[in-house]
Amino acid sequence: MPLLDTFGRVHDYLRISLTDRCNLRCIYCMPDLHMRFMPPARLMQADELITLARHFVSLGVKKIRLTGGEPLIRKDAAQIIESLGRLPVELAITTNAFFLDRFFDLFDSIGLRSLNISLDTLDEKKFKGIAQKDSFRTIWKNVETAVSRGYHVKLNMVVMREQNLSEVPDFIELTRSQPLHVRLIEFMPFACNKWNYGKTVSYAEMLELIQGKFDFEKIKDAKNDTARNFRVRGAEGTFAIISSVTNPFCSTCNRIRLTADGKIKNCLFSREEGDLLSVLRSGGDVKKHIVESITAKHAARGGLPPFESKGAAGEFEKNRAMISIGG
Ligand code: SAM
Ligand code: SF4
Image (spheres, rainbow, N blue to C red):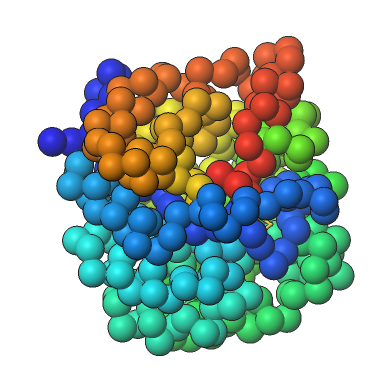
């Protein structure tokens, strides 16, 4: 039985957050240095996480992406990844790549071939300003290793007017000679990230910046893809723009999120959550709660007002911080 909402959207893609902790402190994600993390007892234990994932798979989920916080920081990450690798799903991961070198062999052994890596700058000093940690060299080395080992590597760049907008052409330039897939992401609002509409560099602005500098073509977007994909003519890699703010993809959304403390979120921006972990721990009907959550999904943005409307920042601010949702 597929997970169908009242708008006819089939939900077959689950993002599981392994932890709300991270070795980095990206300003758009976890801006507050004094953030309070979830106590370990509130986190899904490995066996609970696998059981919940199995319930989703039995309801038609075909793809699982691990995220966080930083998923690879969790001590039992390898055990969890190995177990999920045995499920009949496509398994993927979004990571900041700092610990990636410890996981290549495991990924090879379970056939995980696609890596989404967050990287907002190619400048070591700027990296320290954005991620608030001096980790650029380690991360870049792991990106290079991932490419040389033949992984499909997507580089996720959150484009920010003051911090890295000027580097967009440098990132696209990378795709000419390397099989890298750069994804330019519009800055989105979450708790404590000081968002306002004017801070989001829009799809249109990004295209305008790129247009004068590269000879590029539109290429096909995958079904349910949140990215508009392009290729510089003759380039090995591609680039894409993810415009969740100025051109949202809600009408084709197939995503469900499971937070590290076991709450189901039927939308990234939804303030309504279902406590699947408590249902599981008390022996309740997990599947029923999953179906109820998907049935209650709003048409767009978790039922919140358009991003450009007056007072929107205050509404989106009432969500969790991105780091404790799982992007
Ligand atoms: N730590 C991992 C990483 O950085 O790839 C996984 C978690 S991170 C929350 C997942 C993705 O969310 C990253 O690509 C990050 O750039 C993106 N992200 C975080 N905050 C965002 C925001 N305010 N707007 C747009 N994307 C954001
Ligand atoms: Fe950590 Fe990823 Fe958030 Fe950066 S974007 S603080 S790497 S979870």
